[in-house]
Every structure is written in structure tokens, then in C-alpha cells.
Amino acid sequence: MSWLEKIPQKIQRVVGAVNKKNVPEGLWSKCDSCQSVLYKTDLEQNAEVCPKCAHHNRIGARARLNQLLDPDTKTEKRIEIGANVEPIDPLKFKDSKSYADRMKLAQKEVGEKDALIVIQGKIHAVPVVAAAFEFKFMGGSMGSVVGERFARGVDAAIKSQSAFICISASGGARMQEGLLSLMQMAKTSAALTKLSQAGLPYISVLTDPTMGGVSASFAMLGDVIIAEPNALIGFAGPRVIEQTVRETLPAGFQRAEFLVEHGAVDLIIDRREMRQRLANILSGLMKLPKVA
Amino acid sequence: MSLRRATDTKISYLDFEQSIAELQQRIEALQISHDEHDGLDISKELDQLEKKQKKLLQETYQNLSAWQISQVARHSQRPYTLDYIRELFTDFEELHGDRAYADDPAIVGGLGRFEGVPVVVIGHQKGRDVKERQYRNFGMPRPEGYRKALRLYRMAEKFNLPIITLIDTPGAYPGIGAEERGQSEAIAKNLYVMAELKTPIIGVIIGEGGSGGALALGVVDHLLMLQYATYSVISPEGCASILWKSASKAPEAAETLAITADRLKALGLVDTIVSEPLGGAHRDISLMMQTLRKLLKDQLVALQKKDTEQLLTARYARLMSYGKFKETTPK
Image (cartoon, rainbow over all chains, first blue to last red; front, side, top):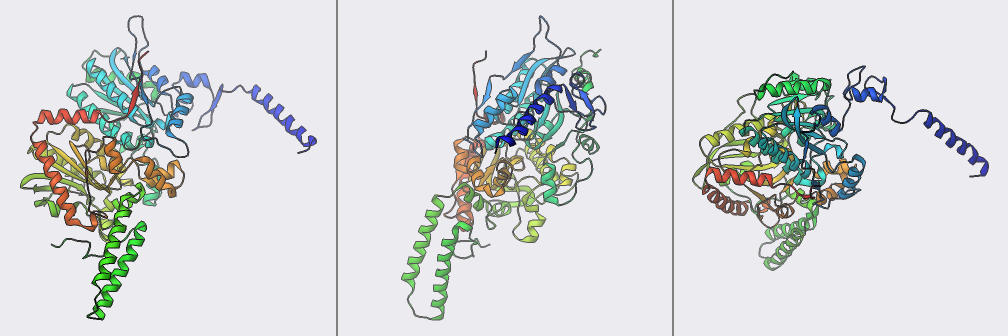
């Protein structure tokens, strides 16, 4: 390339940099559903639900738990459960990248050690242990750590006579842990038998997406199963089904509304009402005073 | 009823068995030419060829890759659930349907006797020929199949009968109707109920242990796995097309997924490996049955000695032990 040709490129680069500065990154976002341009702070204050069309954006595990749980007070603090349980690479799994590397990358990018965060606290003074999936961490996939944290969460709920809530957002089992991840389906489901025996409620909240091994275990075992609007929920992924049956899938297939229609889910709740209505349901099940 | 032996039925050969197949052709050609020319002594030559073939079979099967093992696990002549039921159980009465929607032929179950003891036996069922394969949906159950199994689990519990499950499925069926009728819930419910079912459960992976569709029959007190069976969270092809973006990388995926009996035993996920006849269960079905009968009997006797509380405590501890992770010191 001659020096003459290089000049326009340099100009381009300079112009590009200026343009970027004019639109500060991260201030605005566009709704995936209605394409409205939204001010990010507005979106955050609206629980990541589009104020124009009520599209529910995916949300991180900690933000989710912060929305649901009562804030810390001087005397009562929320307790994180199983934070010291961290993943290893038991199979020395390797595709184009090793599992160990993928895991490290996810940990660095997401700032979490694995895909499930479990916190003990209260919702409108109702005692709960709440688990939430971090979808950004390897697609919210369930491996040994997710299963162990879930089981410890259930244990903590029994010990503290709390309800257990799990907010799912997961592609399913984590392939990189092979059969160990499949066994987490059995482990988590078994843990829930003890919660039932203790007479404590389990609420399963299904958010976009809840698929595969997560859907086919604890996610479908709630005393009450709640879904967020339009969440994709199912056992097999839509593409796999399409390839198997060689038919076009019906409109709205595997969406939350479809599941309510087919009797698989109790009700759909808008995220902005989730905290209030969870408290309402739990206070009823636990025979606690009516929530204000 | 005649059982297949190496000598009396045509074995279909897998890709990696081609040199063994060629020797078989030479043996057969020699036998035919002998029939045509009576009096020719071929015994020495035949003996040599057969010895060579056996040696080759031994060498091949000593070093099977995970991908080759999954071909054996899916072999079209491999004994299926109804073959085991016919050979190992007496007085079998098949019980159909989920009492709600339909009977799913991809799962069979019923009441039978094993070594004289009344038991409930439930397993995935694949089909042998084109028509039966379709009828059995290739061993891929729909929700009603799992709900039939659930109903039989409950019945076994009620009458305090041990349960034996036989696992052999590519996976739960990914279809529109299956989703509409709650495939996820059907599997989940089985996992939950099996975890606290008040009767002994023994599982045997006889062929393909395909993911959640297998696990819905796999929450057990003792898990046996045939030497050339597989058990996996996802099929090697499925894993390869997701992670390598190409199903042709299935052999690599099979290796790294740890789907074979020896690796799963080392991980503590399988209790007993059931050795198969040389060249796989389909080459000597009666020997396969004999081996499994003995191991099943041992486990049944051992589990029946435990009272319900011991049984359930041990099962729960076993379920909770699944998983490999590290624990850092809390800050």
C-alpha cells in the first residue's frame, strides 16, 4: 500500500473516533422488540423491561436478586450461599478451546465464578432463599457448581424455615462436564424432596430461556410455576424439533403464553410486579400475615 | 426359543470390523466349496481362519475408541429391553398406558418374576425392522411414556416390589406434541419421585443412555452398565455440531465427553460394569444374559437386605455426592 492510499484510511480512523465520542457508549439502547431508542437509565429503573412495549430483556443474576429481595438493614444482612463453591474441569474437556479456558474467560467477562447465584434474605419480610441464573455465564448452563449451590440453597431454606425460589435462565446442562452435569438434574430434584418434606414452598420462575436439563428438572417442579412474558421454555430447542419433525413450528410455540395454554405453567407475571406478587403468593402458602 | 450365537446368525459388521468381515467371507466361501466338493479336508484351514478371526476380534475390541463403542451400543442386532425381559424374567405381564393420554411403545413395563421374585421391570424399547422402529419411535419416549413409568414406579412402591430399569434410548423425543404435553415436566417428575421412592431400584444401561430421556429411568440405588454401552449428557453428534459446528467431529466429541463405562465408573457415576461377550452382546446373547443375570441377582439380594430408611438415606447421599468442584476458603 502506498503512502497516498494510507491517508484516507487515517482520516477514516480519526473520523470514526470522533463519531464514537459524540455518542457515548452505553447511554442509549435500542429495544430488540419494538426498536424504540431508550435511555439506559430508564430501562434499568424499569427492571430492564421496555417502557414502550413491555419486552422483557434478559437480566443478570445479581440485578435480579437485588430487584426481588429486601435491601440490607443495619441488623439484617443478606447472606450469599455457596459462593466458595467453584468449578473445575473434571474431564479435561476440549473442543476448539478447553473448558478450563472457557471457564476462565467467562469468569473474567461476567465477574462471577459460575452460573448460579444463591442468596438468603427476605421479600417483603417473607423469609426466602433465592437462586438466580446468570445467563451470560456460558449460557446459564448447569454443571456441578450450579447443582451444588442449588442443593446448598435448599438446605439453607430448610434450616432457616424459608421458602425457596429459583429464577431460571439457562440453555440446559453444561456439556463440558459430561455426565456429571446430567446428574445435576437428579441432584437438584432430589434436594427438593427434602424441602417438600419440611413443608416449605418452592416457587420456580421461568425466564427467557429455560431449556433442556434445567427445564426437565427443578424448573418444572415448583409448587407454583411462574413465567415471565414471552419467555422461551421447553425441553428440546426449536431448531432441533424443526429438524426432527420437518414441519414449521406453530406460532408462539414454547413461549410462556403457550405453556400456560397447555397447562404447564401456573401464571405469567410481569417482572415489574414480580416482587410484590411473589410475596403475596408466599405469604399465602406460608400462612404469614398479608403483605402490604 | 433359539438364541443367537456367533455361529448361527449373520452378524452385521460395523465399519471398523471390515477386516473381520472379510475373514468371515473367506470362512463361508471355504465352507461352501467344501459342501460342493465332498471329501476335501478343510478342517485345518478352517481352524486357522477361525483362530485368526478370533484373534483379530480380540485385538479390535481391546482398543475400541469411545466413538466405536457408541457404534456397538447402537448396533442393530444388540439385545433390547424385550429380549432381556424374555430371557431373564418369567411370568411377565406387560402393563400399558399412562391412564391419561396414551400408551407409548418406546417404553415397555410390567410385572414379572426375576429368579422367582416378583418385580416391576421398565425399559426403553427400540425396534428391529423399519416398521417396528417407527412403532417404537426409535426408542425415543414421549411424555406419556415417562408417565407410564411413573405410574409403575408408584405401583411398585405400593406393593413393595423392587424395580429393575433397562436403559436404551437416543433421548426423549424432540417433537411438537411432546412439548405440548410437557416433556420437561414428565422427566422432572420421574427424577423427583424416584429420589424418594420407598422400594429398591436397580438400573442397567444396556445400550444407549441418551441424556435426560435415559435419566428418567436412571435414578437408582445401583447402576450397572454394559461394557459397550454409553451414557451421555448429549449425543456425540449433537455435541460436535454445537461445539465444533460439524457433526463429523463426533469421534472427538465422544472421546472428550467421557461416555464409556470405564470412564464413568472412574467418575463414580456407574457402580458395576457388566462385561460383554467378545465382540459385543449381540455376538453371544445367551452368554450376555448369563452374566447379567448373576450380577442383577447379587444386587437385588444386597438391596433387599436394607430397610427402607437405610435405602433412602443411601440413595439421597448418593444423589448429593454427584458433582466435581473445588471449595475455596470463605473470605
